[in-house]
Image (cartoon, rainbow, N blue to C red; front, side, top):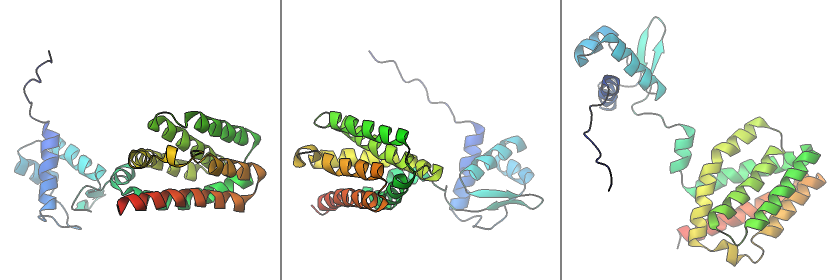
Length: 234
């Protein structure tokens, strides 16, 4: 037997104050660029202490809605909370994500071919074997192995910004691929589960052939985009 949920408790004063201020900003009471009333005035209007107002303003600043200017006050910078990058990726159309992924990974593959080390080559070949082992198995495991291989190629570029970008993209890529597998049985549709294309990518990087590596990446990812567009158009 499940446990009762229990009574709902009022949210902390800071959350309530922040929500009130958020609502007023969204309603246009204070437009973008406007200076908010001082802490004392806001505290009186909201019926809370100045420390509560201060924390509420910090929450709004964290959401990108206000910004404090030393000696000038707190000013409105946005009418709605600004989404962080991971949140924006989560709600982005998978086709849009793949267009950007293609641009990123083509350059990463080219750089990887120029900068890869023996350890990088070993990591890529191990990831390729992992992808082969996962082929024909559960879809999510196959997707994880596929993403891991691409991550190994990106890592071989030895550019921390590219690596960080790919890391941010990875959850959205994973979800998009899992959804695609649910619509199209890619593993069965491709007799070699895309192994030849991935082997070509790894071989090109290992051989130090930047143009070939970029081309192999582009062909593979463009093919996936084609499947996505086909499903979107029915």
